[in-house]
Amino acid sequence: MKKYNFYSGPAILPPEVLAQASSAVLELDHIGLSLIEISHRSKEFQAVVDETIHLIRELLQLSPEHQVLFLQGGASMQFCQVPYNLLDNGEKAAYLDIGAWSKKAIKEARLFGNVEIIGSSADKNYSYLPKHYTIPADAKYFHLTTNETIHGTQMRHIPESPVPMVGDMSSDIFSRVLDFNRFDMIYAGAQKNMGPSGATLVVVKESLLGRVKRPIPTMLDYRSHIKDGSLHNTPCTFAIYVCMLTLRWLKAQGGVAAIEKYNEEKAARLYAEIDRNPLLQAVVSGEDRSRMNVCWVLKDAAHDEAFSNLAKEAGCIGIKGHRSVGGFRASIYNAMPMEGIDTLVEVMQSFEKKNG
Image 1 (cartoon, rainbow, N blue to C red):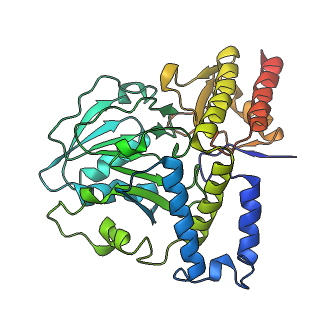
Image 2: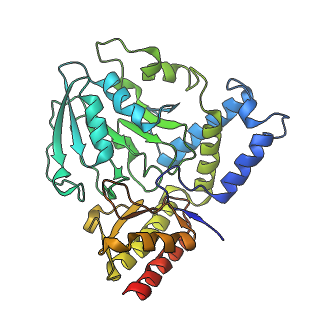
Image 3: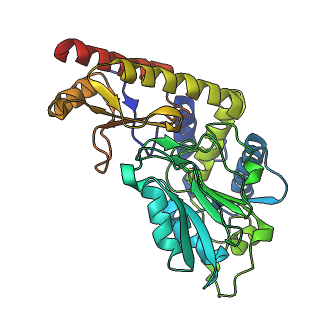
């Protein structure tokens, strides 16, 4: 039976990417060595890095001002690395508090300077996005999370900012068209729409750096990694290679614009069934709904286990919601095929027939 990976991450990857990556683990491009045993300073791996960066620039349409880096530590490392590089003691940064991940970023930033929370949806367990807020002009930067994986919200409209804007795009990077050049910095863990876990994408304007007075350890200083082309230390070579394959796949699908249309269709089909089905209730309503992470609950939670078992029997894996939200969550990233959505919809309809 075919299984569909609805986990929030590490996430589903295209079958052809998995096949190509598996082959490269045995031997990379007929060079007689495995991908995971070649030197990160070899010409073969430099070609991988160069192509991957080129694809990122092309797909996101980045300006020459932006530097593209591959770092380690996941997006969680960026929660402290961003303020370490951008926020001096006594200075202020503005943050939106829209869920678990932005909350973690706020906690880390407070170690380095003052944090002003300019908008929060904590009052309703992060089931909506704050709309009316003012970004202070005296802030060093403005930080926002474009998609909240746990709570299932997504920012449809990116605000105008009078200060440098930093975006955590871990769960919706490469999933929709945005003017990415409006951001002075973007970071994203690779394990949603880019590749496997182990690599973190950082896109940053070099002019933003070198302004803080504090000494920055070499490995935490973005300038170290810019200078050495993401090869200051040994990177996660396998993860970067699979990112390259995934971005090749994305380009072959028609790029970000094409995948956005597909993602809209997938999300619309799933939300339509949730809204129609009298036994289900969406956690988020209206324009704040995420197209990447669809969250819902059963109106009678006593049936949660039965629904979970029905989904597993149909091959729908990883739909249990986060403990802070409960219920269920389907993460439908770029590589999730429509047949996976249709299978989950059939599970919902079958559940209704048995329990309605």
